[in-house]
Length: 552
Image (cartoon, rainbow, N blue to C red; front, top):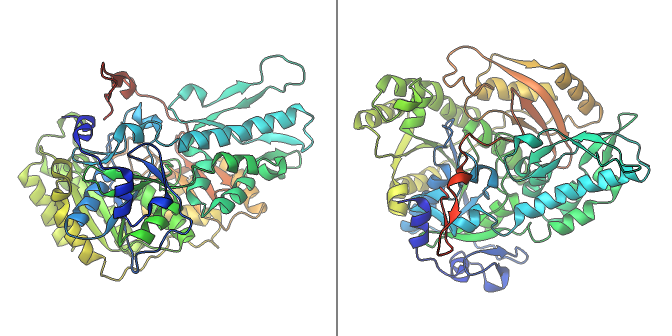
């Protein structure tokens, strides 16, 4: 049975009753139909006295992912099954993957959030608001140039955006109508989840902080190479107005009618990969256990969650779950993709030692956090492979849980729920990989060498020039957000095993003053993805009864 069919057969509760389970009064709920709502966080009662934060991350994934969202939902349902007050704080799905290769982002099987079609498509319109705010700024920039360019804008660095995968838009020429005074120029599009406004949206603490950060966006440079800010165009207020409702977190439910907050959605390969700070802090106010997820492998989402988001929040995870599958471990251990369902102990052992252990050591030894490995179980997993994995982790002193929430919902996650309760009782001491006082190159090299395992870092001339400019402008003492392939610890998506020494190649460094970090572009990473040869969009339809079908 497809995920969408399972979700459709579930009996959902009115969102008002789901919110009450989380201690949210009806006066703090703004309904968007029966099953989804916005939370007004003003005067929201602080219910939890000792909230625990659980971060779910993973090994480097296969192209279809390893089920972090499914695992996160299962853990929340499992904690509820054993009588704990738990809530989810997840990202919103982007239309890019929904219509592309990866599909939806609402979990799978009996471990889903609902209504899945709404969440995966337009939801409450947050991404549309972010797209509009981004493109409003673009139109104001070109309008200013059209009417005389009093700010002496020489170079525009701000791009337009769209929440779809469309490689044709990576680089475009605009202003080609030939009308008098229109200035043609080269432009480009990012996918909405890579927009600086998405990052600002997720890192802002309230509407006033949001507006200030929007004003601090650098849109380009004048002829003296001085930055020009959005506030110089007096547009931050209008952008904030477009985001007035979007900034409120959304609440939905799991298939077991447990509360889930879903808000914001930056990718972790090209952005910082975490849901909003407002959503996480709201969840921790109203529940004893907050389960949140950071995108892709621990080298991307978890690193940014810890080095960027935790610095901003002033919080740390009490436990970290590293999700893995037997398939992905063999995928990173050298087994041919077409044979991943076949037993292969050697490839599995290679993947455990070369990938899983690296992520474990990063979380446990580099960051100093409590860690447990969660195996997202498939029916094709061989008992001998599960035993090899269990034995390998036991030798390293790492606890493991075999999770079957896809098939059994919360019932299949009771073991990990009990283990997490105990793990959260242990002391957790977060150590950052770099200090904010480090210069940009030092930050990059500490992440590249300590987290990725790189031998060295190689900088392009463009990156060198931009690092010099950024430090000259006084923005060296902010975090870095490294854009890198999710498929490998290296910057080469085909280097799955990373058996040989590798370097990290820095192609560009871009200042995001509004978001408050510097984006470091590695390898051939793109901020506007393309569609696969057979996109998921070809299987999505509406049937004769008006039901959406084909989302997976």
